[in-house]
Amino acid sequence: MPNKPAPASPAETRRSAATRHPLLVVISGTSGAGKDSVAGRLREDTDNFEFIVTVTSRKIRDGEVDGYDYIFVSEEKFEKMAAGGEFWEHADVYGQNKGVPRRHVEQALAGEKDILMRVDVQGAETIRRLTHNQAVTIFVDAPSLDDLEQRLRLRKTDSEDQILKRLDVARRERERLDEFDYLILNHEDCLDDTVEAIRSILNAEHHRVHPRKVSL
Image (cartoon, rainbow, N blue to C red; front, top):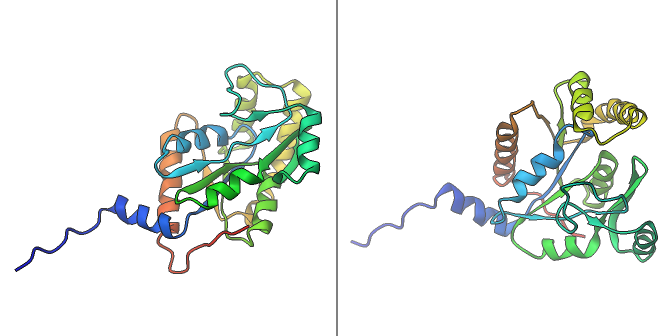
């Protein structure tokens, strides 16, 4: 009697689902809540994620790597790219231009991995519209505005006016939570828990009866 084939492991099942319908995962949220750290941890899983690096016209910060954290270009170059239709989505964020390269998204959608993007709330709205609500949108936030303010001050990259502006924007962004699929509170020193919660969300998304299908 022939041996029965071994059942597929959860990882194999997930990869099979991803092969059929890759997810477009949008990580967004308030400034200082930790969405960069969350996206950075997820992108380390290169077997399952294709990370789309955002183009920005802001100056590079200490510790950042051009082409990895962001693609840094001049204001003139950014405007030329925008005029040439090279961005899938672009916006002015805190006085800084940021855009998602169209070509990179098209290449990623042709593959088998889930596509990971880190954008602001305005960008998430545009992506929802462009994908007809087929993207998985996740809002990452701090537990409270007081906690958010403390994080912004501790990172020491913004002036007092910039901090106050970011907090004001955060209040308005929180009012748009209903536009997102999921809310994740990123508690201090709990990055592993935050990332695991997002992995659980994506695992569930891969088992939807009616899967999301993204096309440009």
